Length: 232
Ligand code: ADP
Ligand code: 5GP
Image (tube, rainbow, N blue to C red):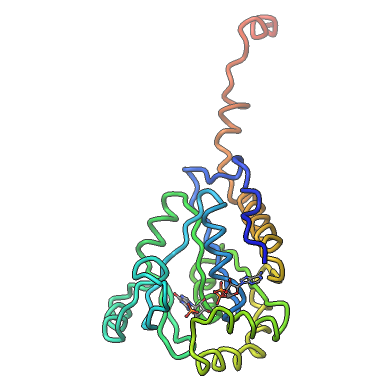
């Protein structure tokens, strides 16, 4: 597996302070490599912020409260649902997961692009609320590779791994709900493909603030000599 970060996205694609941040949604069957890819992307792509979800799942070895997730109990989670503090939430593999609304909106309003690593149910809810969101589905190369990634990660019990693998045959067809598909075989190749999506989305005409065009071309002062020459 290659873990070298690929070339970072060029300066020109830095978010403009005066445009709203773009919402990127990434989903994949468990064990595909989405967490690994998202961590790398937030370090290589400038102006990209990875949202931290709340979950009732117990932390895995090495996970920290407030870094991978905010780990909370079911009662606290339900209170947050009642206070409408989630943009979306869902039960995934038997645990509750939710995307906090306030930080997401704050980042987008500051022109920072937001990366959501959420499941398919969550992605469908977010796409309804944010029609401009860009959705990307990541697929593992095969069932065998996925199984060995989950086993090598050694972070879930054999029962939990089985529960996740049992859902895969159904989950892979969800790619149809997404705008882009990336097959995560070689890590650096997948990173390159994902960076290309971010770069292209940032350059979409509809997202650009073209006020500079008016400043530089329409409002530009005519040189005096030329203005005089043009007088009748
Ligand atoms: P997910 O977040 O999708 O459940 P992870 O990012 O935790 O998956 O990755 C699962 C395991 O697979 C980890 O041990 C990770 O290091 C490994 N992995 C991720 N991407 C690749 C890849 N392209 N090639 C080989 N191993 C990978
Ligand atoms: P894991 O327990 O392996 O970290 O994540 C399990 C699944 O929950 C993954 O598919 C992940 O994308 C999803 N997930 C993580 N956070 C959220 C969230 O806030 N909302 C939803 N709907 N799914 C989430």
